[in-house]
Image 1: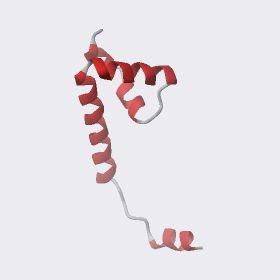
Image 2: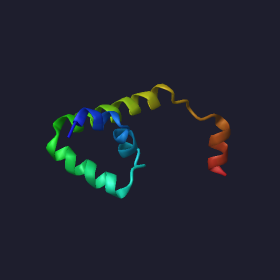
Image 3: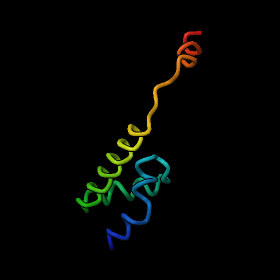
Length: 70
């Protein structure tokens, strides 16, 4: 298997976001045991995604606070 092509296929993104099929999830989890670079790619994508979300995060306004309290 060409693991670099597999990583480039977009499977990492769908796996991390929980959008892959059950079959893809099983395959990914099996391959993660065989290919350390796959684990690295998953960890890197998770870190990048978290950093992007935190960088673009905004605090909710007071309107949200009031809605939640009601």
